[in-house]
Amino acid sequence: MKIYTFTLGIILSFTFTHAQDMGFEEYSPTSTLVVPEHPVEKAKFTFIDVHSHQFRMASQDLSELIRHMDQLNEGIMVNLSGGSGEDLVAKIKNVNEHYPNRFAIFANVDYSGVGNPNWGAQAAAQLEEDVKNGAKGLKVYKSLGLRNNDVNGNRIPVDDPRLDPIWAKCGELGIPVLIHSADPKSFWDPMDGDNERWLELKTHPRRQRSATDPAPWQQIIDEQHRMFKKHPKTNFINAHMGWYANNLDRLGELMDEIPNMNVGIAAVIAELGRQPKRAKEFFIKYQDRILFGKDSWQPNEFPTYFRVLETPDEYFPYYKKYHAFWAMYGLDLPDEVLKKVYYKNALNLIPGLDKSLFPE
Image 1 (tube, rainbow, N blue to C red):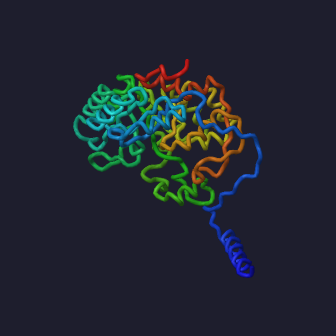
Image 2: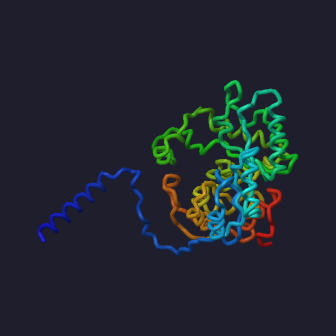
Image 3: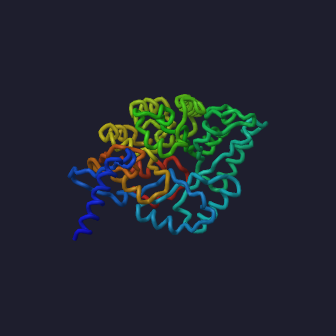
């Protein structure tokens, strides 16, 4: 008995001391709030995920993806990492031989030759060939505007006129451009106690930038918007709501200014879930131009998206603490708005999808 008491005392002392010395990063309290809960493991309506990445699709066994998709009620996955040329053809071949109606693949452009004579015409021709081979759209990574340089070593702006043949070709072919520019504005802000992404930057230091690295945040965002306006016949899907999910008034102004700009909600559900009243108003007003997307393929994280969009639940946890210190609230969207966000808007923008997978 004496040994047991002594050991227990050491454990209690250690636990108390550890709690006293615990760093901010470890603090993750369990809420004691008792409210009605309506977890959603499967989307109410069959959905299209317009923002997914499957880099090994040329050779991978797709049956495991299909199993998870069926559990979530996901009708079609859009793989934005299609590549180009032979790589794209191999991915489309694997899809067509096994699940031809469950996946759509977007092509990508190689910007390494920007500045060479006739680069724009050649890149547009390659894109046209990729679409003939089965690509359903074009995905533009955030490297454009951040890391891509021309043949002279200069940063390529998002609205660089040398890229105009690409955007014009997408309009001509009737395919959408899903584009990710920059990152959250907080990554450019000082990493101090006022930065609500402090923990993310501490745990992922490579995401931190200076005010001008490689250009000011607003400059990159403005480049993107100028490009959208310059190509009104091309449909753009602005990934991550253009990093304005935390400022829906400004995003609404941009939606009004740029009628060919649509937005995807991938990786910004935490922003929407902390402002349910305002977000619901926004979704209802712009219901024809918002598309469902998730980004990273983590099936266990989708239910948070469903719960935010579909339920009136209050104060439930987000799945990644370093993204958000706050709890989520449900938007409780009307069914007709949900249908548009989940699949109708994607069917209108992306050509050649199997509409029979979805309800009227």
